[in-house]
Amino acid sequence: MSILDSNPFEIMERCLWAAIEVQPELSALVRPANRIKYHTLGSTQQGDSPEKDSTTAADLPQLTIIPAGGTINQPGTGVSSSSISIVQRFTFALATDEPRTSLSVRRINAVKWALMLALLRMHTTEPIPGANIIRSVTPQGYQDEEGVDPVPGWTCVLSVSVVAVISKQEAGIQ
Image (cartoon, rainbow, N blue to C red; front, side):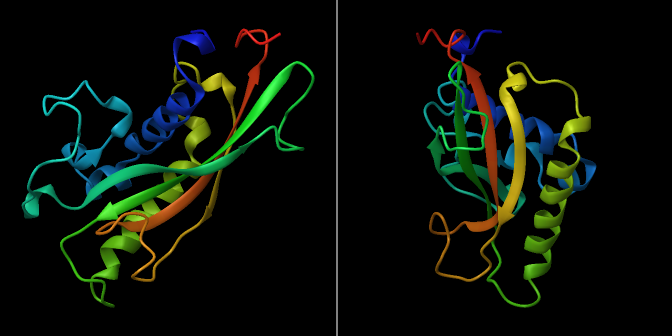
């Protein structure tokens, strides 16, 4: 697969989903139908949005990955005269039907730990098309306080940083 066949941001997001979906701890906590994948826009039966119009208890918790900024050609990330580097931050966000109290935080913490395990095990999973551009995936932190959610109704369970290095020649850059 050429880098021109897919953009590196989509490759990074697909790699994150692939890494976490093979982990039994996460599968036990978040059903496949409750994983909201924005990189599959246009390929869902619901049209342009993978979100459901209304949710029931069976639809929760929901998990999604939200792009959260990044840098290009940051020194020390693999940039060279023949390559470019992209550091993309992503936020794993969780929606539940529970208020955030000391009792309901158990579900959030269980998902947070399952995500961390999945990312730490990431290099033992099957190869993902285009994944050869990924140099590292590093958990960065999380926000547990209410009011600092990435999107209203969603809790930041974990933030990660993904470093990708792309050959300028393969990208068609002279």
